[in-house]
Image (cartoon, rainbow, N blue to C red; front, side):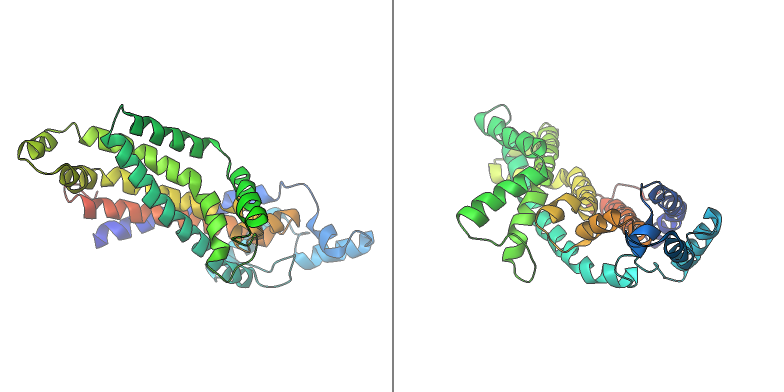
Length: 306
């Protein structure tokens, strides 16, 4: 297991190099002049040029790239053009908020998605299956921002049960977590249903029923356990999407996380912050994929680590 893990970690390096290179050059295609934004709209051309020199934007692009990579190797993500603070400090101040929102979304969506998927798969072709998959399709079809606005209108404006913005209380997480996790719950439900339907066709399921085992034992003790590999795959991948896909939801609820920080950075053409945030999102996704692969072997020892 250790050898396999080390092998996968080494294999991540080329991917990170590609991501770093792509992000560095891609953000520079964003329209707008960061030097002008930093200097101010009323600044003279000389003042703007002085800011450009100060930020190092006057140097050749390959020199900027080499300096950027050198900073990453030293653990330096650069200085935010918007706040004049280290990007690492900006990220650290909001990372916990995004992780809290992500975990809250993942927990409820996984539980709801698995229960709905098992319920639909166990009752394939019946009204329970039709109702469950209708909910799943609706969850996938409805955009997160629309669900967010609907939740705000109902539970914040009308009923006044939950706040619309801010952090500090579990109540601040409820509405953003529901909005962010709705599509994830729907995806997990569909994959769980498909997996359960396939497993219930296996011979050992018929044997278990022939032995007189209770249906709950057959469903949860045999069918669900053997369908966990595909479910874990989906949950792991969706966790990665949640970490990087919270941008819209955080913007709707003015939630101070990495997603909102990315929106603010793009609006300000804050190159160092944009590069660092996308790199962090990519690294998280890569790490989660590694964890999912290792969980394969834990859930099913027959899988060879190669």
